[in-house]
Length: 123
Ligand SMILES: [Zn+2]
Image (cartoon, rainbow, N blue to C red; front, side, top):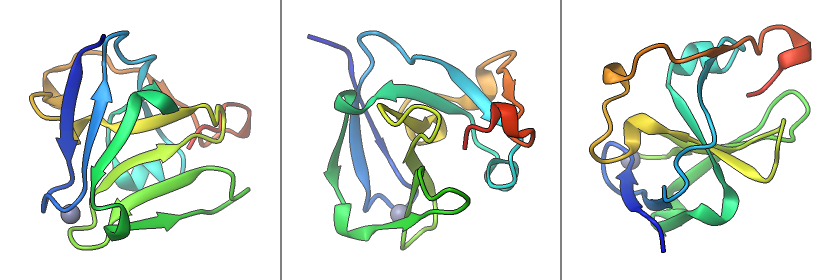
């Protein structure tokens, strides 16, 4: 059992479900060269708590740097939905702005991961 929440990209072609029964592992923003452009608050979740339910064929994959992390975004509306982490490939980082009923701007004091410094690099 868990708490299933739904989410989607902006145009709705990509849809997912996450099991938030355990909550997010962590919430963060990041100042690495990709995240500072993307600008989203991310929530960590184990891979098996994230399920794509629509639009898998509409996802684009972006990789850079060590090509370990897998960054996914909608090919139609361009919205980043989730990525498989380099720092911990057993986790996805989820764009919490895509999760239904979550307002990232209502959350106070989101820690910033200093991905721009290599020792904390966590795209
Ligand atoms: Zn879309």
